[in-house]
Length: 63
Image (cartoon, rainbow, N blue to C red; front, side):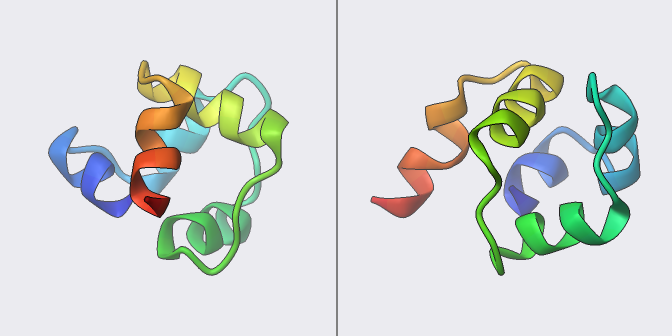
């Protein structure tokens, strides 16, 4: 996530604002740092806000 945000020149706060149902700054920070994985619903909202397939954000990072 951190790399994707950097490539898109986007801050975590900008991403949160783009989401259909925003999450807290602390939750987004934990997701971006890799401390926690998002729920499926949150992952979908993040992917939609980034205009990227969900698997491009998380699946490729895990493998």
